[in-house]
Length: 123
Image: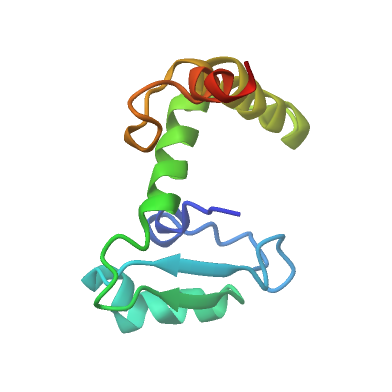
């Protein structure tokens, strides 16, 4: 699960019990940015019971998948507030299946949408 953890570090909610929160035990992966390597940030991660993972120096593109997913999430929900997690998941699913996968073009697929790429091989 991708977490916008930097928001927690900027405006921490003092009412959250990090030990028993849903993210306790999750792995937080980041690049080697100085803000993520700082002692303050690492302490925050440890205090929230997260496991810290960092990209190797030689793999600058290792985070591309997470960054792409994060961009997708921003596009999908536009800062909306959802009454339940189920409603949020439904909105993200609809965005991916009904919009993103049908219209976005990718270089890996010859600059056609995933749906069009798939159709070439099913027909």
